[in-house]
Length: 323
Image 1 (cartoon, one colour):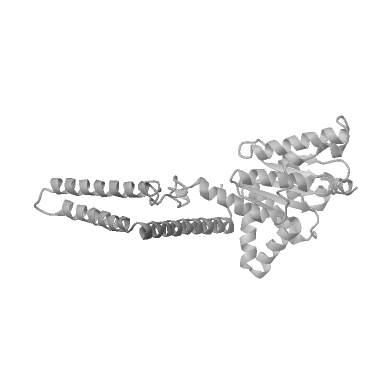
Image 2 (cartoon, one colour; image 1 turned 45 degrees about the vertical axis):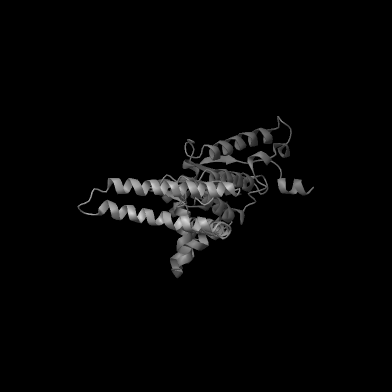
C-alpha cells in the first residue's frame, strides 16, 4: 500500500500546518492566561528551573543527590498544585495550558515507527480524492446511488446481467485486498454505466487507504509517449504512477490512436502490473472480438485471459436520464 508522492507531500504539508496551528493556539492561550494571571508565568519559569536543577544535582560528583532531588521534587509538585488551583479558581480546567497533540498515537508526526499513522492516512485519502474528483463525480457516484431500474424490469435480461456486474464490482471494491479477482475488463456501448461503476470502485478503494489512479487511455499513452521521446520529468512521474499504484482505472481503452508505440505502451502497462500483482480496472467500448483484432496477441491474450470480463448491456443511461 503506497500513496503517490504528490498525494503524500500534500497530506504531509497539511499535517505540518495543522501542527503549527496547534502550537500557535497554545502560545496564544498561554499568553492570554499569563496576562490575566501573571503568577502563572512565574510558576512556569520556576518549574523549568527545578527541572534543570534536578539534572545538575543528579550529576554532582561526590554528593548524595537523593535528598536534594526529593526536595526539588516536592517543590515542583507544590508549584504544579498552585498552578492547577489558580487555573481552576479562575474558571479554567487544570490542564488548560498542557500541550496535547491532535493525534495521541503518533504525536502529530504522522508515523508510528515505520508505519503511517491513521491520521496521515486520512489526509492522504482526502488528497487522493481531490485528484480523483477532478475527473470523476465521487460525490454523486456511489454504490448506494446506482439504479438498476434503468435497465428494465426485475426479470429482464439486461437488469439481471447488470445486477451480477454490480454485485461483482461492489465486492471487488469492498474486499479489495482479499477479493480473488484482481483485474476487471468492462466492455459495452457508451452510456451503460462503466464509468459510473468505475467511480464507485475508485471511491470505495481509496477510502480504505489504497493508492488509486484514474485516467483516460488517450492521456495515459500520451504520457508514455512524452516520457519516451521528450524525457519530460512530469510525464515520467505520471508513468510511474500508472505502473505502481495499488489500483489503476484505465478509462475508454480504444479511444486512442492505434500505433506501434501505443501497442507497446499497452503491453508494458498491462504486463508490468500483472507481474507485480497490482490491480487494474479497464473500461472500453470495444467488444472482446474487437480487442483481439485491434491489439497485439500478447496484449489481447492478457486482457481477455487475466481479467474478469464484465459485459455491460442495456440502454444509454445518460440519454435516459436526460429524458
